[in-house]
Length: 187
Image: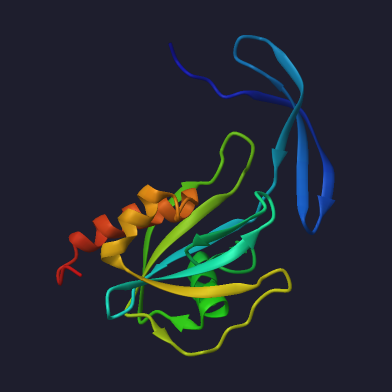
């Protein structure tokens, strides 16, 4: 059996504003069934950073997330438009804007899909090494952020207890910790 893509028969934008863009597709499945109203969220690309201090701490942000109506602990990240800004520039900008930290070295690790069932965007994950606090924070109007430093050795416990529970953050942590094990100076 060969898996096949769905065929888009028609597509129209049904919501288009600054907070939400949704496309309605009429699709034909490989088995011939037609679905008239498959909705796709058109979301911006995300740059996400795993920032590590010289003291082996990871810089997190704690902030309110209205979709789940919870205050969550996660890595610094932010949206960007690839037509206007590349992922490296966005990662540097978001790290400093949200935390006041800058990375002496920024390494691209991988790109993942956020929620490929209904969303069209990707998360570009970076490792920020030797991050230092400049004190220059520039938050968006919807952001109220607490910067939290957590020693690397405590991270797995916080994932297990659920204190760290955001999928992109967990993916970046696992990728980054493995990546750092294989670095020449083995952080």
